Length: 551
Ligand code: B12
Image (cartoon, rainbow, N blue to C red; front, side, top):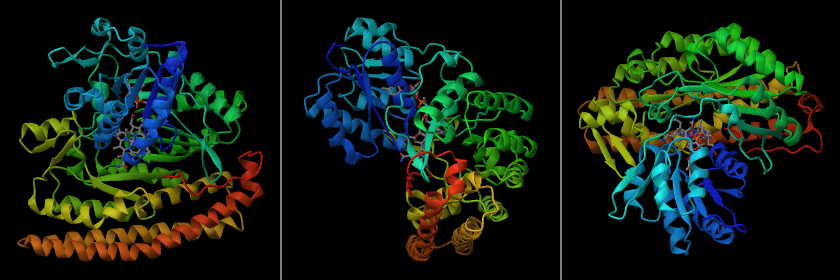
């Protein structure tokens, strides 16, 4: 399969930011002495461009990185478009979705030759070296394919490597994205999670193969990657995509991340902004204060997920709402930007649970939040239970279910329609408010103040975040009130109310959105022109501001 004069592999995946999966796999293939590249595939519209690129490069293998279940059909459409243009190489699907739904991938798309599950740094090199010899496929762990009779065969997975330091680093041969002009680098310091939430696709991904559920790179290894990104690529913002950047006990987190901070200092890394993700039970103010001071931690995605005790129980979070409250209070007290999403609707939610969630949102009205339904991702405990109970509807990769309480289901249908633009579009007000709050925090991080230009601007930003939250809660509360007061309403009445609510939300949202744009432009202007910001971030060269890219 591999020829001297052409690429061995091109990996295709979402590149909303640097995609660590396709870049790590390209790194693994290169480390094995074969040329490899990667291509961005962010939406169905990009199929023609990806096909052109692949046909021009003529790689021996195209790797489809299927991380999002909702986008799986687009990846298969890409495989079919490649075949339609005469691409005759090997098409291999991988990633979380191809791991848990290998059978669906191979039985629904003849254009795909194989699905290689789980972490594939080793497997992809073995597949390339097999060079089309199907006889060798039986020896490649987690590889699935159709045999001559069209039956899908799948090898069991091998234990994962325990030492993550031996794995190749993601290739970084494109300029880093910038947020407020600051180069932004995503990275991963661990794989897996100590939690076992019932809805989580990642916990499922790591549960389905032998070996430990959570593994870490050593702090020194992570520091060397970060130092390279800092010195050679100018990175100033580091976003850890670890499922949990923090360990269950604060002392453990402090030991690990304190060591990372010490290494960074020794390697000449100056002031940086660090972003991570954590479960609420791992947070406490002393820890956050230290990490803010020593590591530059400025943003933490806190896994709140639900403000109601019932909701947390049903989602298998293993913590109660008081833990979530403490976590966000710890963020507030230490000035770390804590942000979160709510899986407001889960299969057993009641109207009282929704009310608890509204109260939680109000309690932290200064924190931007988005909400949606807990989706049933393939293989998760949520998915299995719904399936067993006969409540899961699935069609190919699409899965759907009905909430147990018909009134909550009605509320969900109203909210889904009425909040569609605000909550679910990438440039909707909810995502925008999160990005906006993040930019605010970036400025404060690099200009701790007081600053006569920045301080009043940030007060306006804070007030707008509170106003957006209040507006969202008012509309959600209105929908909840209507459903409660009209339990016997007809479908036609519900759709009339949905339409009215959507118009109010979208109409009222325009003014808020415009104000977000204005303030973002001002923040960007500040980042371009403030000597303090540029000096503190040690930004060399001409100012380059960007309004985009922040989420
Ligand atoms: C970074 C990230 C993002 C980034 C996207 C980055 C980008 N690519 O541009 C952002 C923040 C934008 C994002 C957005 C969303 N995300 Co996201 N995201 C992640 C996250 C945290 C890390 C992914 C990552 O980099 N992993 C590190 C790499 C090295 O590991 P890996 O992906 O597993 O890759 C390995 C294997 O899977 C395999 N592999 C991967 N690709 C391939 C390809 C081939 C050919 C082979 C053989 C093997 C293979 O080998 C790799 C190396 O070992 C994951 C959770 C996670 N831990 O993976 C969620 C995750 C992928 N996201 C998820 C979701 C739901 C979303 C959103 C829908 C959230 C939302 N409601 O808005 C959006 C959708 C975005 C969109 N427009 O489609 C879910 C997907 C669930 C599902 N099954 O559908 C995940 C799994 C989180 C979760 N716990 O549920 N996300």
